[in-house]
Image (cartoon, rainbow, N blue to C red; front, top):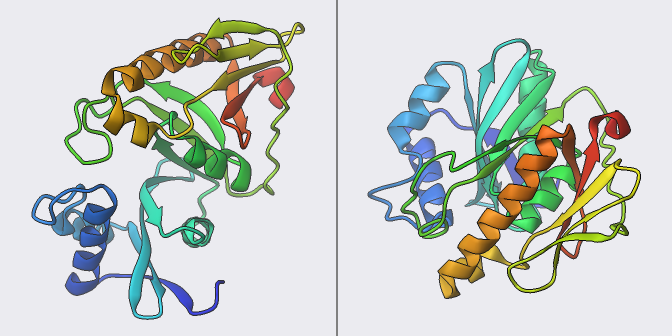
Length: 251
């Protein structure tokens, strides 16, 4: 635990309202139109879910929401935190879920956001198991506006140690990216595939929306074909390359 940081579940109206405001600030929406309204969060808590809040001293510095799912699973609806606190927030969710008997946790994220992919696949050791096309439909927040809301589902085994399996990309280029560089590489034996994403899609979306959308379509095509062939997303390099491993190789 970082010095001065505490993480706890919140149940009261004031605490949940503060979390809702925090999510509004992260997703750049007016606090009058939050992505996760306080009344919805309160209902989720009342029905057995959990809202965790991370405090750096008195300041709210992160939050997450999770609900129990079927067959010893948990679904993390949302998690966000100031830089350096994300792993602690997810660990708090993990401890809560494991304490209730959950064995896995699932959530989604934008596959074009490389830093989130690295956090989920490398730091936590989750695995990308499903690609969802335009999952939420049009989104009007300040982060996703103007793009299609593709999402990658990751599954986190709460019973296993973190063992990410990134493999450096070295195969021949099989597709080119919208910026003219390589988009996808594939090793000759078919065990691994690599797919590159833009350096910062959030900035790109704000500066050049048509180019960001071309990246969306290009990466989508690679992932959909790869998942149909039995690949899973197992790693992300620091320079923006996903590792996709065939299920036989990832087992």
